[in-house]
Length: 303
Image (cartoon, rainbow, N blue to C red; front, side, top):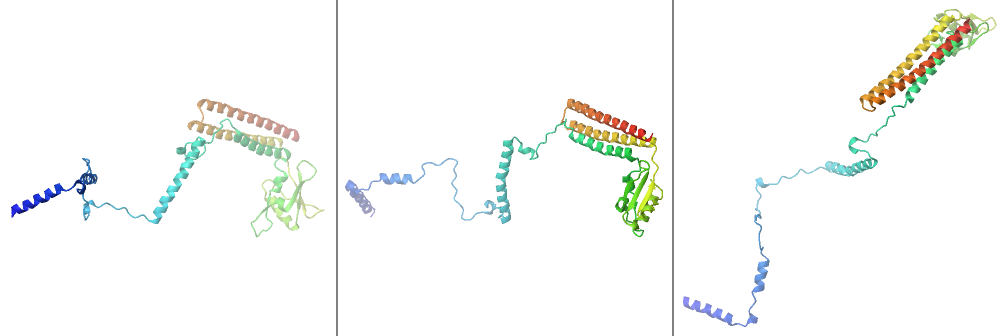
């Protein structure tokens, strides 16, 4: 039986070998196609792993928490703001500013600009010159001082009004500032005015009623002595000097702060000190001249 199978196999092989060449399928293309579908080479570090049907817990990847809509909107707004910030930084860089130093503009200081100090000096001059003018015109007893006496129209009420609101004050002849006329607007204000003048520590006298006009009151005041007025003028000028020194001292403190903050150099600080001293000395000369003029006018008027 074995011999018969072997003979049949030999016969089939012989028949195939005896077949024409056109009927035999070429093998070379099939071999090339089969070799083309297979990888020719595999990298030594490449490891082929067959994916498991079920993934173990140890190899499970960690999933990120799902973001809420608010977080997404917040992230989107940040993304939109970044270009604006970049544009702002680019604009600052184009202007020559450093974005890291903030957006505050750098203010340049002119240390030799004394405009603020001169303005303070001028305000002090206006105030004290006005005081000297009032002193030279009428001394202590002027129309403004008499008109400022508080008057209480109603005894049941503690409310008071300046005398100028209920009457007119005018000087009368017979001496410079010695006799004054007080003309009430209403007859009901006459008695309250008399009481107010009596209570006043500057006058402490009772005004006299006029025989011709029941609404008019007259009062006589003794003028101050010349030496007393001169002393008051000197006191006013001394207060004037104190104000000028105080303003200059404030400016000197500002110069020291500039030096501590390295805004100015030591040489500049010395120049500022000299300039400040000169401005102060000039004002002191003006005050001295005004004091001499006021005292001379008072003494000549009272002599």
